[in-house]
Image (cartoon, helix red, strand yellow):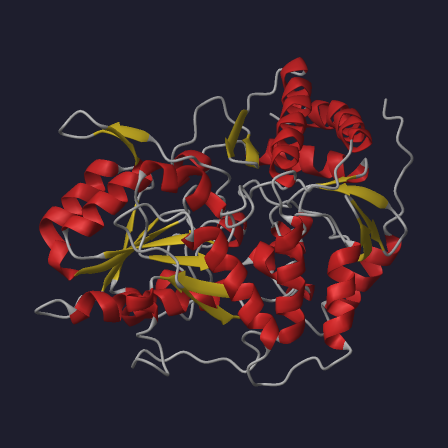
Length: 463
């Protein structure tokens, strides 16, 4: 028996019916439509701290956090004040403004200052408005930089199945996230020519990557990867032993192979950047290993919920972008003064006290949900990368996209809907990371645990 009050979602249903008359599928991003989980999406109108409210007045503990940017909680007073001050002066100039300089300086200080001796780290930042734009720019820049020192053009880009790097044509191949949720192998409208220079390998498959470099190394411009994939669920990089007996994780092997073959490594930190530490995945896990990637992409947290993303890297690569170099990139709203003000205010809240809190809350959510699933005998795997985490409804470790696709999605869907009906908002996909914020409280953990008790039963009832 469920002791939660029944939800009224009639206004959300009405809004979704209305939306479908003027917006394809009723949504501006596919996963929001609930096609992967079934049912009707909730239409949200307010957030405060760890909680959000829909148009019907239902209250939820939020474990989506706008897919990461709400790291300090919804409507944090410092972020609201920064936005109000900037917006009062103008929403946009289409010209340089101090706010973008301040945000770029903050990113360089956080990441560039940790560059190991002998390496070139983040010295320059170019702002764009979305993660897709950031990756598209990074790929173009990597091709130009790799080809500049090569006898023949290097055109190949290597990505891994299940890693999502935005929806540009060349990278919408065996992507995770919404593509996996909707069961689309890639997308109509993407031509063979757009993807002919993209090679897709299984994530964590080191022998396949080594073989590719052995046979086509001189053609490869770059390898792009999430430091821990979070768009097929969270899949940490595996550790391998090299020929000298050194224990290196998959990311280190990517760097070893790209460096030895004159290719670039692009680290897509759109999800992990400033989410897992004050300097992102790089600062917490890579800098201590003594190496750097060539280029980084950022998004989510650096905009604090507003549309900001960035490409970052050493000056000798980044300065190949126009106007200094010949690699073209432009955007009318890039470096928007309101969005960069929100991002700077958010990063200033990401201090040394925040990250232990995020790690603790992520561990607490993982524990109470896992305990509920164990009580009901539901097979599952809790996997994490920093404070990013997700549940796979399978009893086997998930090391690749192929593994992720073997989970019992029907069980996840039942679990998801029960949690939602009992006041906990989860990502509406079995292939997404979950997010906590610094605003989550002990009361939130108690409510999540209470909802999970019923959700686990719902999952157990699915064959």
